[in-house]
Length: 72
Image (cartoon, helix red, strand yellow):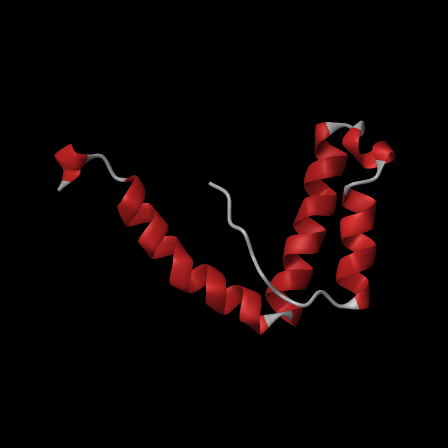
């Protein structure tokens, strides 16, 4: 599942996003990439309430949209 978030990133967000998209990180091992991604998600969770609100509002809607008809 992919979520597209529209928010104003802070300085720390910009630094983390730059790091996550760097060539070093793109070719890093899976554990390193997962650890850095988790660090970014923790930052979003604890420092950007607007992101958490948007995710909470969007997730149930996406889940319902993705359910096959035979579950209804």
